[in-house]
Length: 345
Image 1 (cartoon, rainbow, N blue to C red):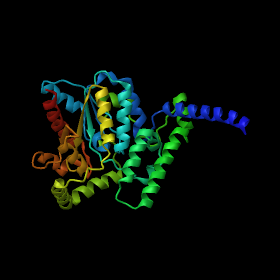
Image 2: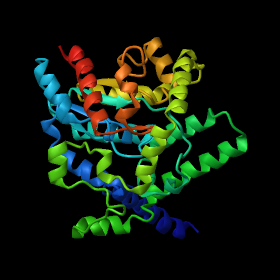
Image 3: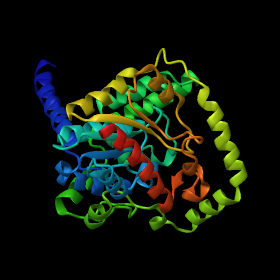
Image 4: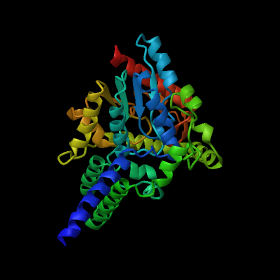
């Protein structure tokens, strides 16, 4: 037994070391153009002063070219890039921020960060085992996900199942489960984009990470647009109700502030300011508002204020209930630029 242990333990240590090394070197996942965008940014990271993080709302709603033109007009010239990717949740966005900080971009001074709730559940169950989901399950992000799971208002059985899923994804990441094809494709230069959503280097250079949703629209998207306009009264009533609910404040006594502070430390490591962003016409996470009032989120661009930004609530500016169309992105980018210029002066 002792002889077997002498053989087994070094072999196990070597296996773990190799697996962890490979996991740390794993290529960016391809879903929704993730790899194309991040690889482009990595090559041009020292060219930008401002970056935008978040979900498809940011991806389809902020045009850096419009923002930059407005900043120049305001006397505070800057160059920005849209790092948002469709489907990103709070933990994945947080992980991406840490990766960008590790790149040490030389000029980056402003980080516009979509205010997303730290929700450990999976909105789209078909994406639970996607390469992207496995990819962000580092020790830190898995810990935050488990902490958030423990605070859910659900049964212990549901919490246990969700914890098991997060731990499984963590083990898959560091065992490099299913990543062989990604390594081979990266070495051979083959396409690894399963959904055909990747932007070309030319598109990324031209739009600086932004792409209008209309470009990808199909019949189902057209139906979403038609449904939005056909149900205008109901949607406007929903917006009014969400506006009334803004006064509600959750109990933050057990909020996992270490996850939030993790983001600010990443920004400070780049000598950059972190600005939380809340979109108009999208339910504002009440904890973000409460954390801002308490001072834990010092700088918040809160656009969910119909009385202050009435045009941003015009449904003609929306492609569907959650995304701006091209015209809406132009308007929102101008309003965002005005707020950002005030902070940069």
